Length: 150
Image 1 (cartoon, rainbow, N blue to C red):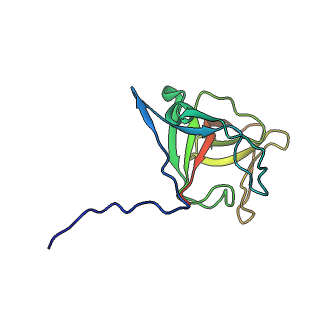
Image 2 (image 1 turned 90 degrees about the vertical axis):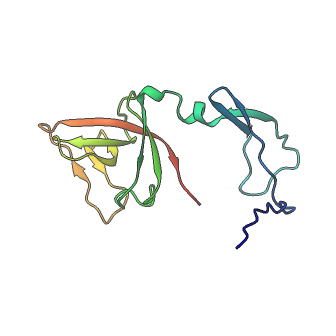
């Protein structure tokens, strides 16, 4: 058996995204003006900048960790298999999605509602967790980024 590695050319609808490596950082082109999801304006000027994905997503490596979603309680916001980039140095704020433990139970990912004293499951098939006055909340970190395969 003979195995040949062939790299076919890209079609007209695709463009290779160039990147460069500087030290431990990998930089890719970044267009700050974004891309239109509706009707693009021909007057939009795409100004290319450089973005280091590790610097953007992992800017605080000593206080950053990554977890993989294994349950459905936060669906449709989070899907099974999503990777969450979590910062342990950030304070738990109202409406933030966080990794928390209530009364030293297992850590879970929920949306924090300070006013109503709830940990909210975005999936309505799951019950929210009521936070009582005597409960001890241990936040492990706040979800800052989501990485999902399409």
